[in-house]
Image (cartoon, rainbow, N blue to C red; front, side, top):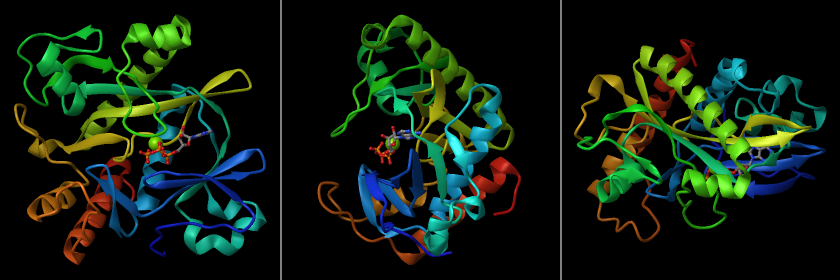
Length: 294
Ligand SMILES: Nc1ncnc2c1ncn2[C@@H]1O[C@H](COP(=O)(O)OP(=O)(O)OP(=O)(O)O)[C@@H](O)[C@H]1O
Ligand SMILES: [Mg+2]
């Protein structure tokens, strides 16, 4: 399997290149390709992580299938061998890392669910004792498990950072009925997945879902419950009151913090051992979660 940083497919229009994934329009469908790019501190790093794209794609597909009992999803084909013939000559760069999906009308809201208090949620809580319009108990510690998973949606910004939406703002924008639906589904999806992952030794601290509409149905789209859209923490190292180790990016962050990179310019290359250890972490996460060998 090649290590892949950027994708070009003759005759297909690339409609989006995110930090990690690239989307192509194919007839009335989308081809989503997960590259081996990695980001940290909001930068795409110049190094690629072997197998990362395939692992993330497989993790997401695993969850789509696991969560089908809760909601339908956008997947049309996950098996490269069954892709239309025009893709055949791209086997080396597409196999295992691509899916064909239904193109949906996306609700422009990031459905964030938090099971533990950390990151921007923790910053909000320290300032105001609340996240958006949800008041929290006093005295929570950093990374503490919340009494119940919280739905803390944000805008979907084209450029710059997503902004927290209060539930009231979200209802004003999208209507109460739809927000209640997205809230209930998001919390149920998170809770089911987090319970499952915990049994496998992984805490999913928080995550983000996206939903879309197609033929009158609301379906789950984008990627689900990967380390790129969620915080994965190793259960064995979990300790409330402290910053947690990231399951996947810990070596990357530790390395970058050990350099003199100012986080305000292009980041440096990762050393080969950091690349290899990080690649291993993704593989381990996949194997732990799914019980399958990669
Ligand atoms: N089934 C679908 N139909 C239509 N659009 C989709 C579907 N699934 C995902 N998308 C959209 O494709 C885009 C994927 O972009 P991507 O996640 O790669 O980049 P990003 O969200 O801009 O940035 P980041 O790399 O930080 O996530 C998102 O805007 C998402 O809403
Ligand atoms: Mg995204």
